[in-house]
Every structure is written in structure tokens, then in C-alpha cells.
Amino acid sequence: MNKIKNVFLAGVVALMPILVSAQFNNLSKLQAAERIITNLYVDSVDENKIVEEAIVAMLKTLDPHSLYSDAEETKELTTPLDGSFSGIGIQFNMLDDTLRVIQTVVGGPSEKVGLLPGDRILTANDSTISGAKRKNSSVLNILRGPKGTPVNVTVLRRGVKEPIQFRIIRDDIPIESVLAAYMVSPEVGYISISNFAENTPKELKTAMTQLKKQGMKHLILDLEDNGGGYMNSAVEMAEEFLSKDDMIVSTRSPRTTGTTEYRSTRSGMMPDGRLVVMVNQYSASASEILSGAIQDHDRGVIVGRRTFGKGLVQRPIPFPDGSMIRLTVARYYTPSGRTIQKPYNRDEIDDYRMDIYHRFKAGEFTSADSVHFDQSQKVTTLKNGRTIYGGGGIMPDVFVPIDTTLVTPFYRDIVAKGILNRFVMNYVDENRKELTSKYKNEDSFVNQFVVTPQMIDAVKEMAINDSIKVEEKQVETSKKALEANIKGLIGRDLFVNGTYSRIVNPLDPIFVEAVAVITDPERYNEILKKQSK
Image (cartoon, rainbow, N blue to C red; front, side, top):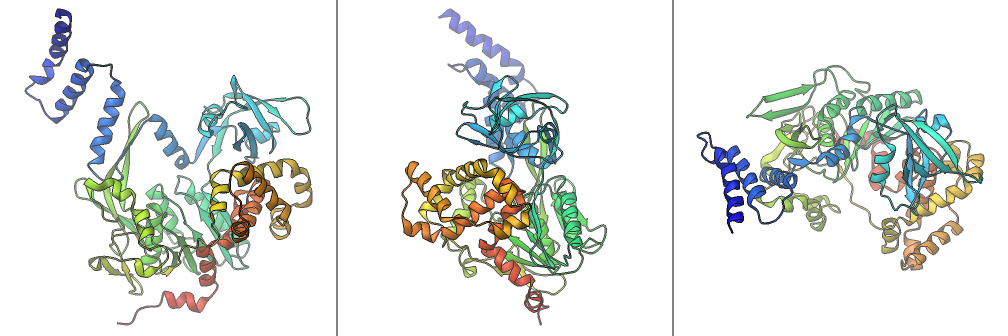
């Protein structure tokens, strides 16, 4: 009994300097609470976990986008936006617990030593990869590392009896956010962007330069499913389509810097020519900054569905252990002065995160009439005086309803269970030599390759083996989606990521409408027409 009493008293004594301090404040209170729990709680306590959960709880009282991430989560969040990482330079997939190389980065470390698409990596340094039931994140941790360090890999190659040993020196590997760039017609280019990373403005300029050499005069910019990234990247990219001194975005933070304006510092690469921006309900943040600036200046036509509605600016605040707080420090406003942030209640953050689902249930994805804006948020565009709204994302100039006619339970299940990917990887693995011999370039593959009934039958057989119910009516309904995705995935494996977009885009109703608008000058101009007063 005395021993327990002594332990208790020791814990209290340790807290006394804080508890009796004349400077006792909220910070001291938090420190005292942490020490009380650590020293006096009946069971052992993970001190780091207590502190992290306290930070998470504090941020949860603020807004939906102020967040804490531990060191591992922070790395996963920031790596796609940093522009590069150090690794061996391969695209891979884990299939049947085996790492299969899909592509090697051109000029990257793996290509230099002779690693080939289709190779299976069995081991890397002292780690077994094949058969180890590893997740992609676990494999990445093995293959990535400091620039200049070696990775010794053992590779199994089709047609070679014995495993091959490679010594690969890690190097900086660029992360590309321009997913596709190609000519839709002799004068219309298409560029798809996945996020707004550090190097994205440079990638955009490179893609536009290449397309201009091919005759591009007008552009479709695809921001569908683009969740954003760095605001400065969005500002730089908007400059390419605006004139010098045009407002792009402003941020307001009464507690810190007040109002800061971001204007175009130059005339961009494409200040004229028809421009269509594709967006949907997952286009957010920096995507809304760019599309908002284009719409406000009447510079182009926005096509798709209402965007996510994130108008809060986060500042990353890193800690020495690699963790980070992303704290909301300002709100941003489009050139017309509208805020894009949708309403939220601090006490109902979980409901906020369900907003996309609520919008779907309300019929917003199928009918523009289901979208309702606060009339007090009504403003007009800066050049032509068209009516637009703030307070809940960017409403497109041309609404496109979601199309689910090709999606059946059969199709949904084979995608969810990875059957399409598995079929394609096996197909390319078994036929790579014949495919590369027959299709010398991307154009020949896109124009000539045909998905055969036998390939569809093979997918159905794999589905049956994976306990998926196969109904011929559903297969027939989803046939176009099946064929396009199989062909697109094979093309991506043989050539580049953009090959997939070239093949699958014609099934996207937003893309189809974007092409219809941009290739019809009369309709395009009518949409942007100055409103009579």
C-alpha cells in the first residue's frame, strides 16, 4: 500500500511546478493533462499517441481541412507534389504476390542497367518481394531511398532460365502530373492534369509547346478528379491563358496578412483561341482556382459538373519528427470576388465529408436543376457580365449529367477485384514480343488493335473463378466499357499513360461535350456571349 502511495505522490510532485506556476495557462494545462495521464493512469500509455490524438482533436474543432499527419502520412501526402523522389525508376504492379515491371522511366536508373517491362523482381537488397504478400507502399519503401545509394535486385525474366542480378543506383525520378497530351483534331489539343505539383506549370508549358508544333490552336484542359495541390502552381498555370495584370485569385486572412492579390505577371502562351476546361464533383482547391479564373474572365467555357467547393488555404507547418499540421490560414476568392468554399458546420464535420454522397442522392449529378445556390452569392463575370455564383464550388457553363448506363454489377465487381488489371498484365506478359513487333508506335495501336471476343471470354472465366456472378446481359451492357478499358490498359503498358486516355476518353460524356463545344465556334461564342441589360 505504501509503495502505491509513494508512486502516486511521486507523480503529483513531478507535476507541481506546472500546477503552481504563476504563468499557468492553456498550454500549461495541456502539458499538465499529458503528464497526469502518463504518470498516473492505471495502464501503460503510448505518450506519442496521446499527443497526436490531442492535436487531431484540437484541429477537428476548426474546419474540415485543418489536419494533422504523422511522419509516414506526411511523406505520402507531399511526395506526389514535390516533383520528384529518389528511386530506381519503374512503374510496377503487384500481381499474385509478385512485383511485375510495367514500364521503366525513360533515361532512369532501371532502364540504364537493362531492366525491361515484364520483368519480375524477386528480391531487393536483403528483402524478399516475390511471394511476401507485400503492399505497394511496403515495396516503395524498399525501392526508394537516398540518391546515389545502390539497390541490388534479383529479376526473373520470361525466356531466361536463371534469375538475373542487377545493381541499380537510385537517382531523382520525376513525378509527372500531366497524364496525357495529344491532338483530338488537327486544331484541338487535349491535356489532362492529375494534380497541381511543384513542376506542373513547367509540364503544362512543355505539353502546350509540343501540341502547338502539331498545329494546336484550341485546347481542352481536363481537370476531372483533380483534387488540387499548390496554389502557386495554379496561379502560374492560369497565367498561360490570361493577359498581363489579370487578377487570378486573392486570399483574405484578417488575423495575419489581410488581403493578398495574385495577378498575371505576363501574357501567357495562349491568351486567345478557344479554351474548354473539364471539371467534375472531385475537382477541388487549385482546380477551382484555375477554372474560377478562366470563368470569371470569360476566357473559356467550363464543362462538366459542379466542383467540390474548397476555398480554404492551408499552410503546412512541419515538426522535427517529420509530422505536420496543415492549418487553414486564409480563404481564397476568385477574380469576381466570390468564395468557392461550400458551407460547413464545425460541429458536423463528418456530415461535411459526406457532401458528395448527399449531392448524388439529391439528383445533382443527373440534373442541373437540382443544383441550388444562395442568391446572395450571385456575381457577374468581369468581361461579359454573365451571372455566376459563389459559396459552393464552380458551376460549369455547360452541365453534363453522369452516365452510369455502361456500369453493371458485373463490371463494377471485376474492376473492384482487380480482374481487368490482372487479365491485362497476363495478356501483355504472354504477348509482349508479338505486340511490340506488330504495333510500332502508339498511333498504330490506337487505330488498329481490336479486343477480341476470346479476350472478353477470358475475363469472364477469371470472374467466375473469383466467385463473381456472370450474366450475359450485364456483359453485353458493359461491353463498350470493357473493350475500351482492356485496350486502354494494354496501350498504357506498351506505350505511355496518355495512351489510356486516348482510348477511354470517348466514353466520358464530359469529354464528348467538351469536344462538341470547342469544335463549334458559334456555340462556343454563344455560351460566353455578353448578357444584355
